[in-house]
Amino acid sequence: MKEKEFINLIKKTLKSEYIGDDCAYLKDLGIVVSQDNLVENVHFSLDFTTPYKLGWKAAMVNISDICASGAEPCYLTVGLSLPANIQSGFVEEFYKGLKDAAAEVKIVGGDITGADKIFISITAIGKTSGRKISSRKNAKIGQKIIVSGAHGSSGAGLKLLMSGKHEPVKFINSHLMPEAQIDFSKKIAESIKEDYAMMDTSDGLMDALSQIADASGVNLEVDLKKIPYDSDLKSFENYQDLIFFGGEDYQLVACVNEEVARGFTVIGEVKTGSGVTVLYDDGHKKNFSKFDVEKKLFNHFDE
Image 1 (cartoon, helix red, strand yellow):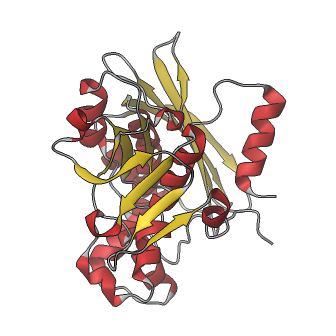
Image 2: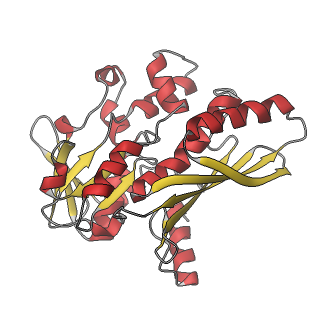
């Protein structure tokens, strides 16, 4: 059973109106809440990163979820489970990385326990005042699809690390030290009046597009040549797969009206139908169904 099937099962069991987006929007409290877990040798390896960079990334991936909702990131709590042989220097450097990444976001508590390997669990809280909150079910036909930043760089960095390579450094840094798109999120959420969809690309650009399309009951058509990516990505085999399926770029993709889309990078449009349609450089189109996308994504529960 895949991760998304577990999520759907939990949502059905709890009969919850809050489960579905990366953040739960608690309208009565004026906040959004999100939680992410990082597990050693599943999400990271100490062979490839440092305690400082691990702390940085742990903060950023959670701040990114708040940004994807359109809320203002405000607070983090940190749960840290550590094996007995971990030294105090690891904890100090890890929290320095957290602190530097969080910047104006306050770390306000958490928990430390023992474990057989490193587990990191962070809860992020954002405030919604003065902002329109997004949902992946809000994409509307005729809206423009916009994105922040370059896509595929983090996936390229991971591929290099897995191959024992450490150059180009820009790709390695994209993977180990991502940047949450705070300004992009703020500009949209403070200006838009109508409902809109927005997600981060933690599991890849194609995953975000597919999830929005599925939740909204629409087709998202994108033009590959309009998607920003580092030109050096072309040196990788199947570089287009890195752009769409690489993951962990922590960029944002949103479906907004034409007026709001001005000033952003527009890569396509919301249309009738289902799935994600890609217009390739040679002019041919390919539609990716929800099933097509999910069979290419990383699954934590594969044996």
